[in-house]
Length: 117
Length: 112
Image (cartoon, rainbow over all chains, first blue to last red):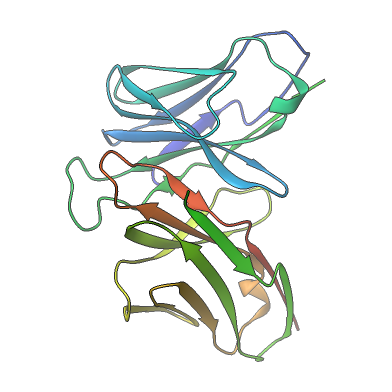
């Protein structure tokens, strides 16, 4: 699991409520990612971070925001959850601080199952 | 737009019956092709990274190969514990491109 923990592991919430998911890593990795996984779509990138306070959008970023105030934590926030955001959310890291061969592999956490009613 | 298509969607094998999973991809420039294994309720587990056509990598009963248009994951004499969904992904070589584009996966079931 590449030293990644995600919390909570399961959450049920109601439409319109804010939700924050946390990804925590203990090995000082620079690159961190949030994906969602849905049947029929595969894994899709929501946002990623390449350092403290450095983040950028992925393929499906609408309705999501992220923050990274310290290296070890990458937070994903749904400002106002909708039923279409019911999904399994995975955090991932790339374990190399610089480029080059081997700098591309992403290692995934255990996931958070989110249900929006 | 990068695209990854995996086939078949599902595959049932008898224990010991070797087979291959296919990953076809379209990408403007390939930085790397990745194979993962995912068990139900768990995160994807990294298996292989391939970088250039002709490259091959092996791990136990699995062997991954790469051409300019597709990758194969060969499974030799599979066991029931190889049952899982296998995911393929590509990364574009474009500057600043950190995104992995995933296929939908092949669900492998190995019957004792």
